[in-house]
Length: 457
Image 1 (cartoon, rainbow, N blue to C red):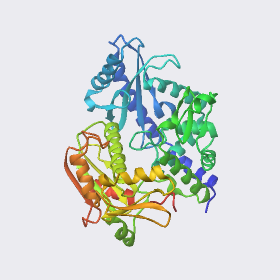
Image 2 (tube, helix red, strand yellow; image 1 turned 60 degrees about the vertical axis):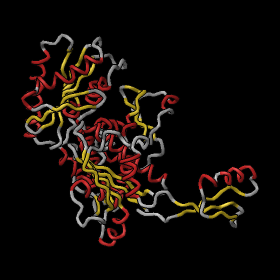
Image 3 (tube, helix red, strand yellow; image 1 turned 30 degrees about the vertical axis):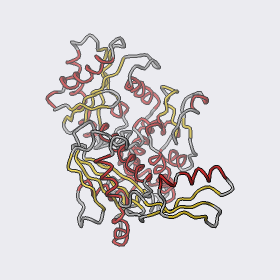
Image 4 (spheres, helix red, strand yellow; image 1 turned 180 degrees about the vertical axis):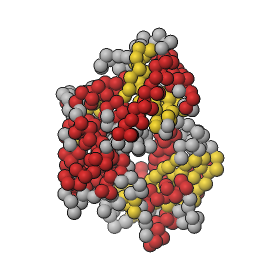
């Protein structure tokens, strides 16, 4: 088995784009920017058009290149007009490429030119620190990384991104809630190399602070995330906010596993989950609750946000009804179909349950507990060996499928589920109800019954 340093030296060249790839992306970038430049030349409110993102910083991965074009708009432009310009400039300048409107904090336009994604993003032309929109920092990010990176750091940023991709935690989108390209670069800047990043991550502590600049500790203490990464162009911004606790945990475990057992598998993309054995499926599938449905076509960030909120809301309601929820998942094709999966301890519950009251010595509390009997109508009441009043109560819900069906059809308003998420074709079933679960449902079910083999080797 090779040591980490030996394997990393072999992998580094594999993360480098070839000359033909560099030529191709540069050609597409210049073509797209020329069209944007030509269109905005007639607009008095546009100050400049610049490249941003991994292309501008030279940290893009082969076969995963994106080109970001930032349109700098005068600070005097109102937010309504700013957003309208964000929609129109990319759409009209690149109309021959079939532009699509996307939403983050503000609308922007996405196109594919020769199969390469190009994003046209509006931002205000502001001084550092005088932010007016969420995208205003991006050109400063490009300048900062470009001025602090040499070729060696670019190579290590690429291999870190490749590692994140293989583990399934690359990207700050709501669908992933992982490590963004910029965060990858900041980590390399902080720790100097890919191996050092992993060595440090393996020992990160709760609420770990990572900074390459000075910051106000009292202000930083208010940040609420498992990993606090100070933005070097804005020390009052936490880049770790967008990273989920699950993604932080996966990275820490993956780093430990790689350092202990280095493998090329950590740099190959694809399905990284163990398939369940027949005995595991037989045991788990009957207790997987599946909710499959269609939804309106929306921006990916919007639909993923609604899906995750709804998934969490259903899980909470199941737990309030005393179903033990072990694991949850949601998937969408980002067009019109989605599926949720919930691995439960049991999909059915006994008809009754025990409810324990306070100790007899707590007179007022005991009286209060007993006063509710008329409303709760216990099946039986007694004093147990712990000197507490106990009752046997009939359960209101014993079948998770019926409970969720009622929740979605009759009690949706107060459940936390997004009101306009589920359109039609709603199906609720258990994992063992169908011999062959296909498509999105299969992916969602796999998420809750499989093991991630890269981390738990």
